[in-house]
Image 1: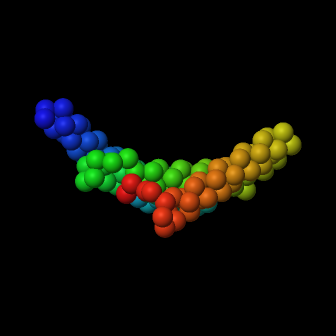
Image 2: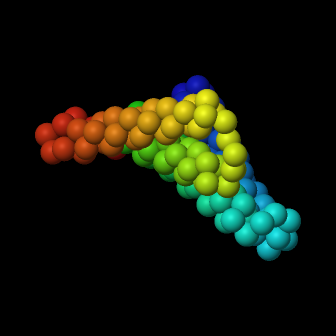
Length: 141
């Protein structure tokens, strides 16, 4: 059917675009690490953040490819993407807190609340991943 072929074509284009985006981010990450425009700590922080972004993009790509192979919705990759995203944010906040000195008490408290929320998100997503991965649970992968 024409609609199915167009759907597949769009998914292939999305997959190609995700691969290009991952390549560009990876290239920029290496370029920024070599160029040494910032302090070593900032460079490493940005490098880790960018590499985790590439991992997220690649997980999205895996989800699109999985859909092309099975034409079914896949929950597990989205849970993994959510976990990686939340951990990436936790690392960003932690590094930001360690780099910035003389922060106000309210800014520090806000960062601590955000860390707690992100940790709760990671915990909830991990529990969801464990539940989906259990034998006997219907999982479309």
